[in-house]
Length: 300
Image (cartoon, rainbow, N blue to C red; front, side, top):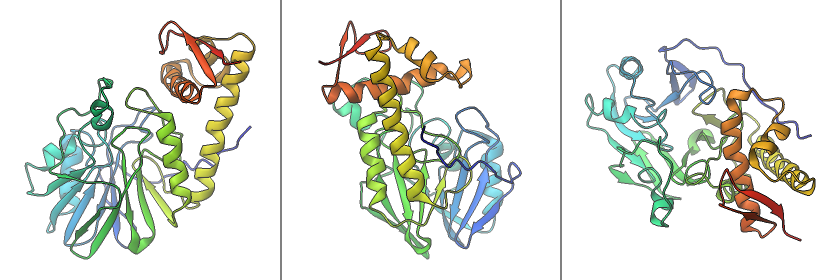
């Protein structure tokens, strides 16, 4: 059994700004849930003229906290890691108080929609970045710069931001310390996610600042265990199929017997993503639809 070195200890007060490194501050939104941990951690990068990374949900109290934390300063950039509802909708509220432009890979589901895939509802369909960024692009402000690292998988438009001055990576939901990420097809894609994890192993980041939870101070060890964990899940799926368990609901009850029942629906989405990845590699076939209700079998 892979042992992931989760980090979950985090001292904070909602709405209060914390100086978490010389160039980075954080304000945490009061939107805790099984998928956001304590809530959305919005980062403020720089001093004087600053960037806001993941403004968070459309919560006036959180926006007021960001504005309070930057009182006397100018917000010049709004950097978005991806377009789930706990990350990007705060941009629209902040734009009522600042002329800052928004930066992101694109609208929700952009790459998958361009490939003809109908993505799931629930994303921030109203968000379209003022500045479209791509892997390797550099965004610069007053006294700071970040390099864009495209990390599709959790969503097709997921971007991490590398703050080279501190060897830090704002990792969004791609890699978190408190939990693994849910990969939910069709916008979520396991093959892309695994490739994006392996990409991080070629980097020299010293610390990750996820949007949820505490920092990750041993990034490569963490990423390697995430890769191993997903491989272990694939082995569990193969074992289920070898023993005649061909439906995802039955697999989830076996594979996630230590997870509360109210999280099994999300677990089923990740199992589907893993099965789709096995299908792409021609290890698994199916009867019916390639979806949650399909019946799956190993390819001889």
